[in-house]
Length: 326
Image (tube, rainbow, N blue to C red):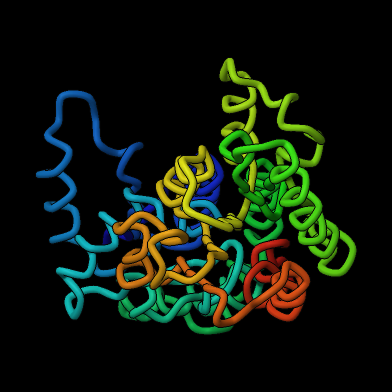
């Protein structure tokens, strides 16, 4: 029996390899299959993928904080969904919990990576192969593999840990005057301090070290640095006080492409002076991980800070640490 294991990203791949080894050690006659590892050079990958899914009775999707909305995971999850009913599908949450998932993965019952969750996963695989093990025998076999499996997954997730919990994106060089920039910076810093001191999150915000608009790097070095910081971040928050031609909109697009949870704090969207670009206004209709919070829900930057603090656990807390429970 083939067990299809889907992954995306280095940490997810390493977790999938550790899981593959554990499944091979515990079960006889079970063949774990990883797409990138088991498709050989020269093979037509799509045809091979469809063929394997046709032979598969059990599929596992290895999910980390970074790949839950990754295009390849979504593609393979969609392909797996086409065979739903013919095979069991088990998202394996290496970080986060069920509430973090979006369709099509959210339609399946997920398992958390801890000792009990992996036991339930292996019991489900065991059921699919006709119960070659008694529950006691399976428990003993898994107990022998668990230390190595847990260590392998922990090591993989450690490499995935982000440097920043929140990337706070703000307009800077687009302000008409230094006085306007300084007034906005003072307000934005209220949000930075709330995220750090009250939410206890790590935060990157480029304007923190730019006290005057004259210090802004117009040559592009700052933009490259900011994108590198964005790659190292787990979530994205944008403050958009007025309609501006700003690199913050580019950063928002990059965050969306990365699949990061995104919160946009904006002014009145019925007023052309403050509107986001049209396509950005439509994003929450398409993506469940994008929220636009307009000033019907906040008036001051203290209000934004309070809202972030109140929603800390729902918006940021689930993604801060992986779960490894005995």
